[in-house]
Amino acid sequence: MATVTAVFTALILPVGQAAIADTLDEEIDRLKADVADLGQTLYELEEDVLHPADTQVAVFLTLRDREGLELDTVELYLNDAPVASHLYTERELASLKKGGVQRLYIGNLPHGTHQLKAILTARSANERFVRREVTHDFRKRPGQSRLQMTLDARAPDYEPVVSFQEWK
Image 1 (cartoon, rainbow, N blue to C red):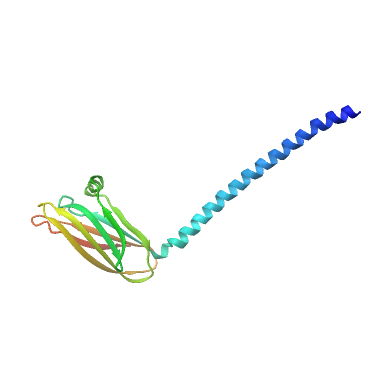
Image 2 (image 1 turned 60 degrees about the horizontal axis):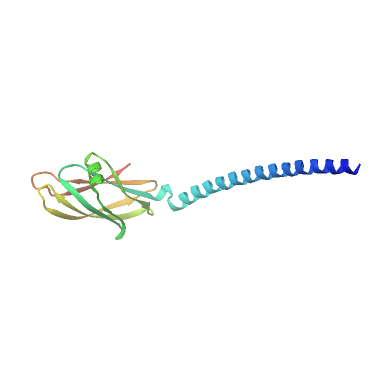
């Protein structure tokens, strides 16, 4: 009888341990899924807090006359604080000349009046080095704000003209 009990115990105990191990594996998988869900929720909350759509501002750059300027650098300031600086590569210039649009800046501003200042350096088609500083006053209203900065330099003098347009 003792032998039967020992065999029975030897067979039942590992089966019980296997069931416990399976239960633990399932619990670990569920906890991993919960952690992943919480991570995604946390990311979404951070995005809402750090970049709420109601205060978001984005600045984009385009070229109107694509042969008049070889853009070198663009620096952006919002309310006299530097927010972006970009040195252009040949590949980026080629993209802009094909009609590309570059996002120079994305950030948040409170509602109200603000000033955007851009300083650009470039080489014009007549091989002159050009540095321009332009400002644009705008009013940040509720909702997303998008500003397009367009550079233009036409023959014969290739003087750069910078214009701003607010997208609705």
